[in-house]
Image (cartoon, rainbow, N blue to C red; front, side):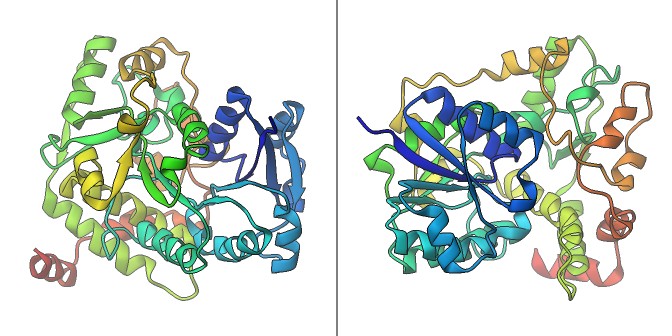
Amino acid sequence: MAKTKVLVVGVTGETGGSITNGLLDDGQFEIYALVRPKSIHKPALLAFQNRGVGIRKCDLKASEEELMDAVYDIDVIISCVGPAEQQDQIPLAKAAKRAGVKRFVPCGFITVCPPGGIMWLRDEKETVYNHVKQLHLPYTIIDVGWWYQISYPRLPSGKVDYAMNTTNDEIVGEGNTLTALTDLRDIGRYVAKIIVDDRTLNKMVFAYNVVMTQNEIYSLLEEISGEKIERHYIPPEAIYHRVLAARQSSETYPFDSIKFIPRYIAEYQLSWGIRGDNNPEYAKYLGYITCKELYPDFEPTDIREYLESVVQGTAKGIYTDRTVSRAYQRSFPRTESSDSLAGRGWHRTPSSDSLMAQAYRRTESSDSLVMKGR
């Protein structure tokens, strides 16, 4: 039986890497990576090549004809592009339609959230989804909840700093909002099942491992580590202020993706922390099928086991190839173990240094906007 040919866009990213690993481990796929010519020598890409991943060289901004050549004879395309590159998928979708691709998986892979003004990132993705549907291109949309890897706080001892890229020390609201969590490493395992399942064609799928509150995550980490973690509760009003201020700061011309970082953070907190969007029941209401329904025998990574590995020092950090902004560095208590955090997070630019402070600054005008919006 011929293997399903899968083209992954963004194989060297965290999500793309998980998906590629999952497909390789499954064994029933012939995998290719769509790669910009300038990125051909990335170490992560070379590592995948050594494991049998083929290369299709093409930029997403290339002509439709060039993209058609790149996706020729591909069965499934899985896109894992960055937040600022969402609409770059539209020419790829057009090329996929012309080339006869059997399933297009646009870049979802975030928390559940309704479209229409809650999260800018969700609305950018929905623009792509609508174009895909207008093309009558077979699709599957996959969302995955909040990663284990960014769900837990820093320990006072600093022993888990090696696996973190921010302090992550805020509890949104009272910390009792249920949110769906997934181990980043399990995303690829889910995707390997979803993309060959006829039940998921032209559907939205929600893949998640467990549903917990922030307070439960803190308590579990305290139990495992034996350390007491101070809890910093952020009231809903402060989240509303952050969202409004971050939106005002980000809406500039020309577009600057760095200015959207505080907006991503604030709008995520609004959606999963205040509104409670990221849970299976709401996902079903929005029309998702859940992986719990589709694959009841799937054995996800247990969050306790993951946190135990973090405390034991054997977990793998994420975004270790990026530079955290000085705004985050200033908020992170300096210890010998935390100094390495300066090498993680987002690329640092002069415009990002005071961005967090600008985005979260409270003003008279933003106060009135929050009150009007409530």
